[in-house]
Image: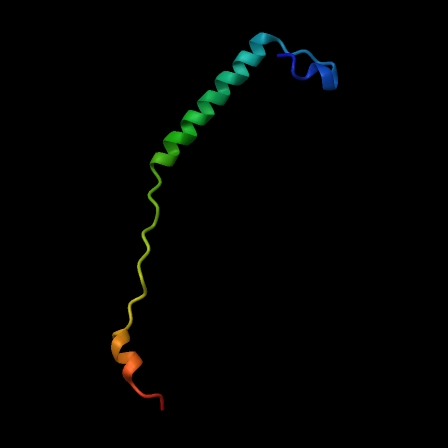
Length: 61
């Protein structure tokens, strides 16, 4: 509650400091729950019409 006093000469009431900490905890909790719903996209290699072994053995024209 007294962290703003040296810089600005402002004292914060402990009631407001407790409310700010409670809101911070709620926001952390909601963000953690939102992150649980995200499924990362799986990497899928591009599909080619000819296998690489055939493409490498054909002579260039």
